[in-house]
Image (tube, rainbow over the protein chains, first blue to last red):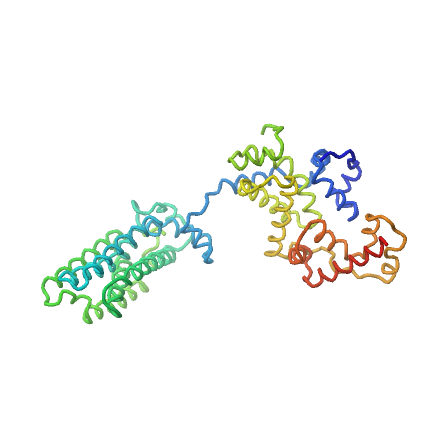
Length: 279
Length: 174
């Protein structure tokens, strides 16, 4: 827009000093939108604002990493940004990890679904249930410890109690694993309790891992628990008349006991995580 | 930082392509008047600086959505005033010190719009609490809700003041 009229220096300096009356200020503001020359004339009058400082703030904001999809979701459901960042840095909460879990459990569930009514029905169902119980243990193990945790050093130095962060991460990992297994279980043949038979073992084994981690390194604790589970499942399946023994009433009771016992150990010994287990 | 002579539209296109230097050039050109214009609407310098920062981050992220329909300064102002309002919505305390409940004296009412003929004078003759509403709703183009947040008054008050301002202007210009 070509304008022949330009604001005089007195008007501009009174505008910058906020002493210009409202009407003339409004008129000047309308003019400024279309007049490059008057906008430039204002530049030396902005001494009060530290424009360089604001620019540094802009550059910092542009350089800040954009949150990944997991962190973004966490932020949008109201999780604090410090917790969201630490959770997003958790290996077993990465999208790739969650997809791998979904793939493994989904495949097992579909196999069980396909084998329904055949001689392999029980075997495939057994594999799914055993796997669904094991996945959270692996997830908890992958969330902690040098070599698997990309934020291990940050966690060690984080100004947050080890046990608090451990529980936050373990709960998030457990929640994610249980949700994925729960969704996968929907395609299982059978109804009602069959869908939830893996739940008590999964919780029991995860809590046992955390309890054992008060004495062992988390990765060793997870390996121990995972191996014990595989051995128990294989032995009971091979020796009992009913291959599903471990998931029947007796097995369920055993795992409820394991949940209670592990919770007790964690509650009494959670101070042992401090300094040893990184957040 | 080098000085660029490109037009605003070219700079926006470069910013959309990820050119940080182009953003710096836009900033040098448009941050000064934006700071002053925002400062007239928000008495807290800290909030104004945050809003300017928000605005140019939004320009960076939204440059690819800029359609050369209006002038770049108007586009930037549109972003800036809305960033200010969303900041005020979260932290209304920044409005403290703003005279929003001016008592109108009987003399002011009597003196309204009698002898003035032109629009500027008519605006100047508005009751003291009205120009801010006219500025927010007409000149800044804000919605009633946005104007209410900016001025720290209820939406109903914005509506009644806007109606009164229209009436007073009509009378003053008659």
